[in-house]
Length: 479
Image 1 (cartoon, one colour):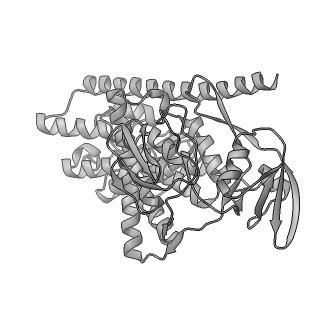
Image 2 (cartoon, one colour; image 1 turned 30 degrees about the horizontal axis):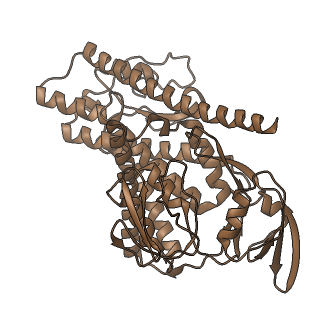
Image 3 (tube, one colour; image 1 turned 45 degrees about the horizontal axis):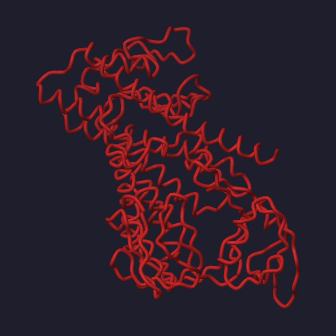
């Protein structure tokens, strides 16, 4: 369904990760009998609202977050931000007014023992950390399910089908070529493609030596577990037979009639011996028509395909483009079924691997090894969600899990109004022995709002710059 309606992807991603996060806060608050009069997905005017029990559930018009409003003795700033406080009751002529309800839906004041501040510190900490915990649980469930459904996949080859180094990479004097067998990465022997990718991604040195049967080749690759390392890993393509595995609907290959299981014979006048041969020709021909000869069973046929043009490395000074036709290689990996326990362990490893990647990126930002230009905002997430939805359910679920982890880690940053900042403030008040004044808390909230607004401006600027750059490059190439 998602491949046919990819625009649903961003709605599911934004909606589900926010819902799960706020559900964590809500369930924890209910567990400790904190009065929670409102559970909202989104901000701004309500598109839908309904009260069940003592809580009003709201779907708002701006779906870029959400909140659980909890009864508070002192936090007037958050109350006004999130839609009013509990000291003001609805008027009796409001259709939502209930004469038997607590404020704000009725005339009865909120009992003192049902406010957030009345609870002991350990209960408040659980309530505050419950949101990010639920995001991690969501990612763990997704990763475990993917591991269980796909099993353990091992690609039993070390032979390079193609290597297209990123523009920023500094290869050695002799390029790694198609047909090379990789024996070691960074001094560590590799036995299959899985080990090769892991070694490339995690090797500690910024210059990594790759040893093949022809010699050793140093590559300047940047810090371990960084975005550049991920780009480097994806630039190595293993040897695959020239057989189509799957075809993405509504992409050039699908429109031309290519199907999964077709064998590539030649493109124009060039024979195709490996899947990487096809990738090399297609990548070098964005927007250019290609005559592709395929074999389907015993029948031969030729189709005309015009690859889509995709911009690569948008931060490079010179734009680079690659052709894409929307196909994947035939699956030749060795698949072993996983039991439930092994799947949970694999899901746990993938989940915490994602946590580590995000923390490493934040650390690289602080040390200058990564740039704020690497950050994306709502537009980038929307584009990634649509692309993942087009690629299939597995890719979409992986993105959903990663975004959920992103939300968890970012919420733990010690910024006022985020969960991490609230945790720090509550611990500081406990150490101090009394709460901060309302003025101090309002100042903290203003600092937090300013920091979040600045972050939003930066990521939106990055998103718009990428879109504008792509549009200008397209126009310059078209005219």
